[in-house]
Length: 114
Length: 113
Image (cartoon, rainbow over all chains, first blue to last red; front, side, top):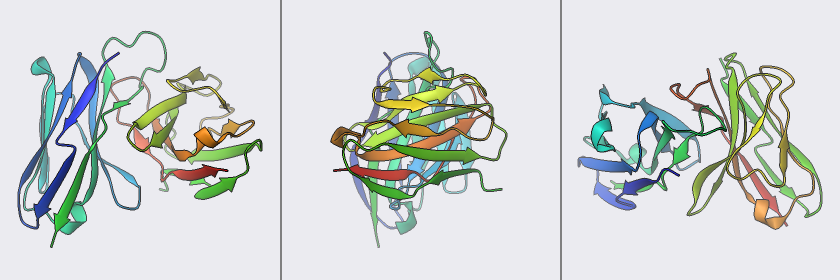
């Protein structure tokens, strides 16, 4: 099946710094989402971005579908950005099963220090 | 709107007991999903339902069952819990199809002793 790899696994930043998180996937996808899991465990949708670029405040994301990767940019990081960031995809070739089965990467754990 | 609600928030369960995790969405989404999250393994799909009245197996379905009697509710049942089912369980929903955004509930933390 499709492989979803995220890097780095862990990231420690000083407040105010910028960062780039990467998601590589091994096959074509119809759906790619970025999530933030906050320290209380809640999964928050950041972007639905199977291709192209989107921005939302200090966060932006770019997916280059032809090269099978996506990047999440966090600018001017804040302590509230801490948590785990997940990339999840729905493979284009999804034989049987759920039409929308998200395959998750293992996440990038971000710690922003004051 | 509430979006997706899950109950209970957390539960400690003796091995061999049964339990039903509840999930309700108010967005009239067609599709609903159950995932489990385990440390080091990320989230994995247990069961799904593309529309009311239909269900299907995900990546890790053994030991779990689901039903979808109506659009809003998608309960997950553990018939005889085992310690390996200790996990955080997330319910999600979407309009359906593989190009739609999935929205997640707050999760249920289950410990099986």
